Amino acid sequence: MIDFGLCATVDAFDSAAMTRALVDLMRGDVAALLEDAVALRFLPEDVDRKELLPHLEAIFAKGALAAENLETLERAEGGR
Image (cartoon, rainbow, N blue to C red; front, side, top):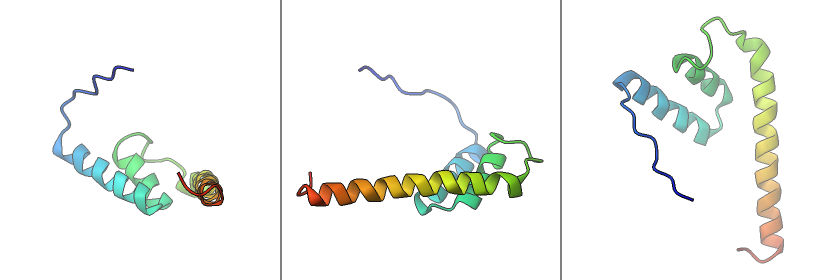
């Protein structure tokens, strides 16, 4: 696979917002990620946060459970 990467100019505001989003993603802070998506203009300002947040939290919970199951399986197999 050849990947030449993304070449783009990102203004300071968007760069800071992307950094916050990455940190929030690593922390698993779904509510903050929702705000990051609005700040980055991925979602409109008037998005119904109360309606969307439980759905996003469910998706992240499934991902966390899958990661936990994978770690358990890897430990059972003696690691990789």
